[in-house]
Length: 59
Image 1 (cartoon, rainbow, N blue to C red):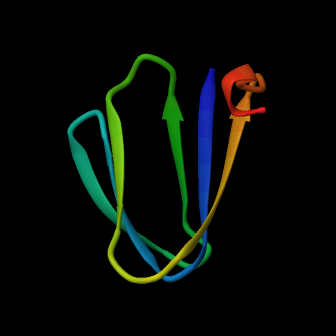
Image 2: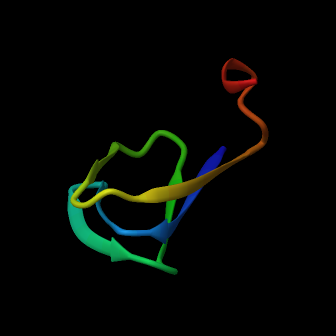
């Protein structure tokens, strides 16, 4: 399973496998399954999350 997050507006901080980066409009973060990750909004933002395969618990 993977999660792909794209920042559509604003700024967000993503930490993936212990590495923290600031993502801005247009940036993409890719998280593999079983890898520790977290996110935090720095400004008001809109983020598009895509999960593959589909997560049944989010339907």
